[in-house]
Length: 228
Ligand code: ADP
Ligand code: ADP
Image 1 (cartoon, protein in one colour):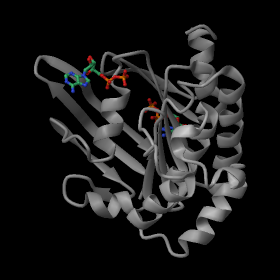
Image 2: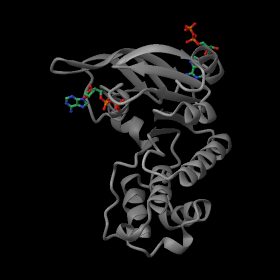
Image 3: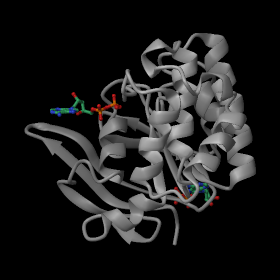
Image 4: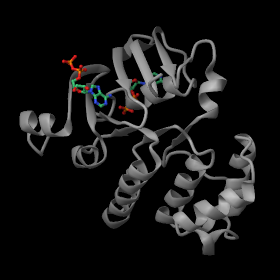
């Protein structure tokens, strides 16, 4: 089964149609960008894919599981990262990662944490309280947290939104390498065309909840140019 199959996915908040009959497929190992400005419906879509919001209409299967019936099976093999989710401040980096390792029943949690710490240059920070980290360090911890269960599907909501340009660039390079080496399917929500162009093989353009265009990054650039 594909990583994600959405059919007519719809979310209404009162009079606001936040996501309007969105259909798309994310193949296993593929990378799809959800490109759109504020209010386009990116976060609402991701929340429905995570089972955090119940759709008003439509259907979504994640890793072959229908989210309306079987969401825990889907979520065991998926994970999520967003700069807007805070890390518990008083817990050390290692303790933060251990919480998520237990949540996902990761075998050999200590070994997995050491491995991620090496990959994300966190080894010297493991004993530091999360509240004392810089934004770039927090981003690396958030990435480690989202990879703790070796997910088959990673949902990234604006992964570089709160970062300075150099750190944002580091994160994009890291993700570029990760997606090639891991074979993990990635859904990347972003308002940044350059980011989506670099990381995604297929792009869905959303505007006020509607899918207004889709194609490869090259196709969208040829239609809209670089300044969206
Ligand atoms: P159409 O709008 O003509 O129905 P498709 O949705 O079939 O277009 O896709 C057009 C091209 O994009 C095809 O080559 C298809 O394989 C590719 N494609 C579609 N969805 C994805 C995706 N999620 N990831 C990667 N490639 C995709
Ligand atoms: P994006 O992530 O692309 O910025 P969102 O999914 O956050 O877009 O929002 C889509 C639309 O839904 C916006 O019009 C937003 O104001 C509205 N919206 C989002 N969350 C809520 C909510 N909890 N209650 C009411 N309206 C909401």
